[in-house]
Image 1 (cartoon, rainbow, N blue to C red):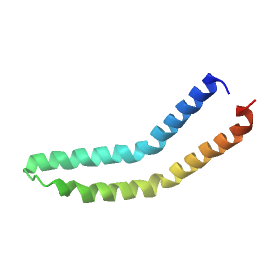
Image 2 (image 1 turned 90 degrees about the vertical axis):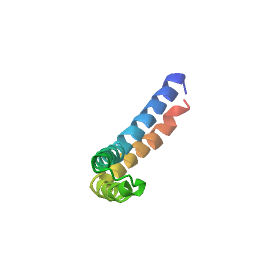
Image 3 (image 1 turned 120 degrees about the horizontal axis):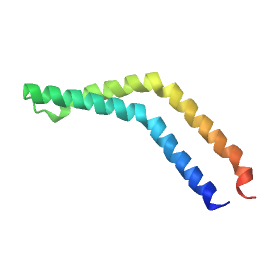
Amino acid sequence: MDTAAVVDMGREALWMTVLISAPLLGISLVVGLVIGILQAATSINEATLSFIPKLAALALTLAVFGGWQLSTLIEYTRSIFQRIPTLFT
């Protein structure tokens, strides 16, 4: 196994991590930002106020994107396992 293959596998693993986590992180960022703006506008300084909307938004996001995330992860894992015989030649 040469250095280029290792770098390529590492790059691919990082890309899968970004791709799978992007919907959850994006929704969490947007909901947190909206709640933060509402708290600043209304002068409500309660730290736990953003927890329930974020949790609900993440549950909804998982319900919508969970199947896609799981199928993407399974496809990536299958490609890694199929690549094993060619790694040590």
